[in-house]
Length: 191
Image (tube, rainbow, N blue to C red; front, side, top):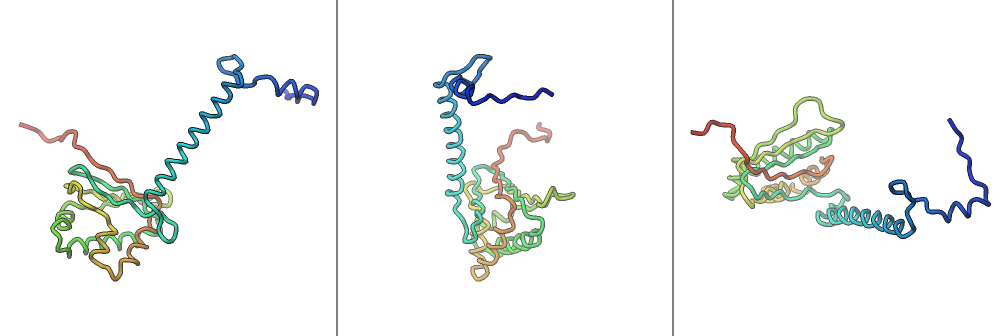
């Protein structure tokens, strides 16, 4: 392996003044260098802006965690993917049990309709890493219906809401992903 020779101080001034940005085998001038730096800064600014907008949009809870967004579906079917910490699955499943009770006990027709089409699944097999995937399937989903777990629990159990909500929010390994499903095709035979 060849050793790289460092320039001495006399050669350093010559080294600095020469363009070192090369594009297609040709040196680029200082103006192109400025545009390259500005483009990189603009990209970084855009990414930071998107992240800040997401954080500010959802807000924070008292403990600094980001609460899950409220699922509202624009289609007839929807899913919510919930990535839950492995050591918090019992708390999450207890919350799902209380959610079931809340939907069954509600006098509101919207909640009865939501309960009829809401199924909860846990991914089978060995957990990937330190989290478990739970999927809420809404089929049918109520278009524009508010599937906010927090609101449903607060309506039904105002006295224990704080405890239920804290357990719910703190069980997430990552925020939920809400998916509107648009039918493309059915695999049944059509006459």
